[in-house]
Amino acid sequence: MAFASSNSWRYDVFPSFRGEDVRNNFLSHLLKEFESKGLVTFRDDHIERSHTISPELRAAIRESKIAVVLFSENYASSSWCLDELVEILKCKEEQGQKVMPVFYKVDPSDVRKQTGKFGMSFLETCCGKTEEQQHQWRQALTHAANIVGDHPQDWDNEAYMITEIIKDVVNKLLNATPSKYYNDLVGIEAHIAKMDSLLCLESQGVRIIGIWGPAGVGKTTIARALYNEYHENFKLSIFMENVRESYNGEADLDDYGLKLRLQQRFLSKLLDHKDLRIRHLGAIEERLKNQKVLVILDDVDNIEQLKALAKETQWFGNESRIIVTTQNKQLLVSHEINHMYKVAYPSKQEALTIFCQHAFNQNFPSDHFKGLLATEFVALAGHLPLGLRVLGSFMRGKSKEEWEFSLPTLKNRLDGEIEKVLKVGYNGLHIDDKALFLHIACLFSGHHKNYVKEMVIANNDSDVSFGLKVLADKSLIQIYENGIVEMHSLLRQLGREVVREQSMYEPGKRQFLMNARDTCGVLAKNTESSFFFFY
Image (cartoon, rainbow, N blue to C red; front, top):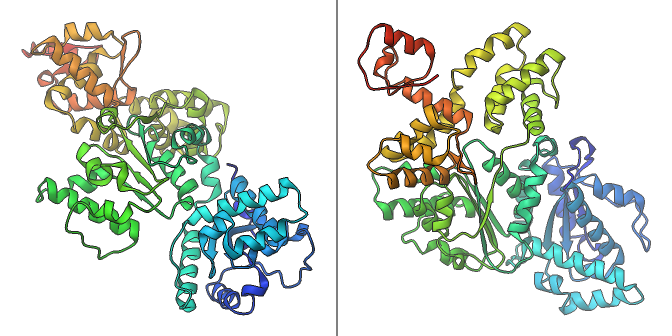
């Protein structure tokens, strides 16, 4: 999807309506409230209506951030309104315009299926029109009605309904992600295109999709982009970030209590109900089994978290989509999630672009010298998006001398932000898997898995095989088809930092020695210790 430039908007709201139904009553009050909130609303008072919408009106639609479509009983009796709707949905598809249907004293299912009095008006309008035009109108009505779906609206209290609509419009405008943000996310369109086939939004059933890959590769970024692009197609939606911390931060609760607390937080956020209290673990199914929802569970690291929030597809209404991001592929397999997307590292050119965006605020180096150094920083980050962003931001605005000075230092030390993110995966390992991680980080990255099994001291060979699978499933290593075990450069740095911290000032007490200076110093002192030498 190509998003419109933020400076191309002229209006906050474009209202599409049938004048004879709403202009002098409901619409007039709604427009007054829009004005009181400081929203710039397009008004068509001085546009002469004819059989086709004018270029002026098409421009107004395209220059509006959000289109509010007021479906009323006679909306479909106007070919003008139907053409407006087709144009609005084109803008939604082509430039990310938000669309908010409002069903004014009309059943959404009548709009969706063109039935009832609404359908009779539609059929009259279709008389004499081409098959292609009729098809366009039908598609537009069905699509627009599906954005929100069936929901009760109390039109006996129009003041309340206007308040709710205003609140919804304001929230949509405030929460709109600037288009430039999407345009600057290198490779995001390719990720979304690949996810589209997995989401299969046209499918009627409920589908759970997993996004997995190493820490810092962009799983959360992709999930946020998907949420922002698709959440308006669902009645209810939630982006539940950092599920790991939400679940693990309650040391005083047992397993049932942790799940109950997690469900309570989930439903409170989804339903926008701060004081919500639940008393049993069937609450999600009871509340959502008939609702079309989009759920994103970000940074899941425990199967119990999935059992608490998305144990069964039957918990959610038809056409619901649940997206889970995790470092652990095995977690997705254990939960029988068959639709999975592994996030790959960006290409060399993409990695350079990401770094330059943060270092120079543009897609390329500011000069030839820094361009040469930029490629070294990209190599240092190992194409990991998190590392590219952090290192790029760290170097922004620095002089030539500072660039030259920083590179060798950063080669031997992790940035604090990068270390914090990467260490989460290491800290969650079993003690035996931690030991294997350190062996690979310090000694065996780039070697064949059989060589690793021979060299690593363990209780038996199967322990190392199991450990290698655990590390691979948790995205801490990659085992290629030819058997080579590879660990990302920043994870190797993390492992070496862990070993260095075993004894900051006495290298001889560390598990491994990893540079010539420390090794020579220990040998010179004739220190007796059990360590490996590594150059």
